[in-house]
Image (cartoon, rainbow, N blue to C red):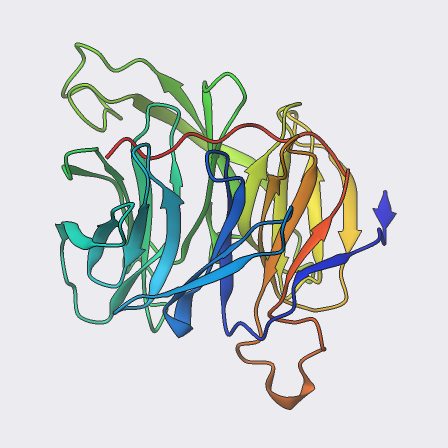
Length: 300
């Protein structure tokens, strides 16, 4: 179950809080962020080309847009970059002491964006659905560190992590057309999300669940902050693989490459000081470890 596969260095870096790896299929590149350095990075594995975009605020996540450019989860709300690099606010909601954190694009092209307080105060964050027009519907109003979000291959399950709970939770997803106001509805034409329940609980001493991704078999891969590992759980919640890592703070994982068979890992140096291992903060890749799912682009 526990393995130490060959890790390749995609980008040797010293990210303070590397996060949110996302494969941009249209551009054939990997997008990731350094939250506390206010940087969005890209990496093209075919050519080795790298780019860096400086944002004006801490950036929790960056995802590709259907028409080109990026949508970003910033300190004060959701912004968009056009294909030409121009920036505009899609939704601005500044809350003192709070910032954007992890985000994911749902099968319907909406953005699910989480927030958290800088001091990680209990219940100080949220999880919201943001439509292509910038409309926001708050789904979970009192979370602490909103983190990994993902969907099953058929789109009927949504996985979610509020890190201090040590759980990955799962929700049922149903078509929301015509059910505005129903319990769990997140928008007039949006999905109905209901039936929250624990999917797995990470035992004390094994680290805290952070970012996640779902593979083509419906298994959930999760990075364990302070756990020095990535875990894979089958659709019934059985732990079937543990990938041991040479640094304590992996933050998130995502499948990438043209065939979606390579698992990219982000990591952090924050809080480790001079004792940080050499690879902490780098973008790493495990080649041929599984089969990922194509991820949709934000519709806005």
